[in-house]
Image (tube, rainbow, N blue to C red):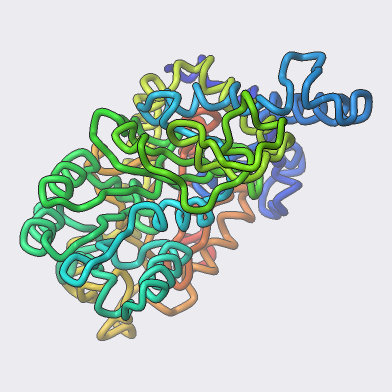
Length: 453
């Protein structure tokens, strides 16, 4: 996908004026800002806006009849039927294996309730250290629910001393050596903080070989990198849709359950998981849909589904993840090349060796001797990252990150701050351009040269 075939015009982006860019000339203030925050909240697809407006009009003119009679053929009782095939394609799944439903953490709890069955000998939950907090809370609360101590139940994988990301061999070694005590391997596909894309296929195989259940949190993964959940033999996965899938703030989530588990009965049944053929006859006994959709509980928000559908239609026109992944590699690689050319850049191995232990972030031993600078803690290998670069600013804990973040925004560059010291920049291939990457690198250099250095 070349620069000329970008789908940027399919999206509404804030202007430089909207984001408070104060260091740009007046004639640039009404131009789109440099939005590199799609890993946190994707930009608004124009089609999503149109579809939501359509559904509001159907509500106004059809009211309750919209469930069964719809002028655009999207009857509300079946509206997720328009979304599930596209989600299946994005995740490398069969349509019956996916369900557009709920929200990320609610779906995670549903899946852990279904799959996490600890015994006296096999009870541990293997995850990465520094997992997204909501996941950490879910792991700990699930352990406590089963009467277990989270401290001895949740097994966290940390990078080696002086490193920022996990090595594949270290993950596989822990699974091989402790697999008999691990009930569930549950990592992020793409780690939200570092941007590392874990080797999902090899980890899944290693977990299954040891008799472990293997699940994945795909919040930062779906719509970001290619997936083959069915062929990899993943047991289950969960995701949100407001990051790379651009469904809007708090958008509807989704889940995957491998067809090998079609016999599994949901523990917490809801009427939307009931067989659609008899759902509206209100039978007293629950007859679940076979597959992932049997885990549905309540009817989905039509407005949220319509918004997601608008974005997925753009993915479909773009050819899904094949061409998008190639463009993503090119964009992220280009941004990285511009950033590492800066005189303020320090290689991550030098930073790790001098200042950091095996924690992702720790106070420097001698912060007073560190000149203002930055490194990139996201893997340099394109095969080990998605559309994200995480910039770590030094000295740690000095407030430099906040000053750089404000400086970038003053030039119309919107990234994502992760306290205390990281800014994430994510060139989303659907709407970001090489010019965006050039502007971001230039704004960073300008901020350092004239306002910090």
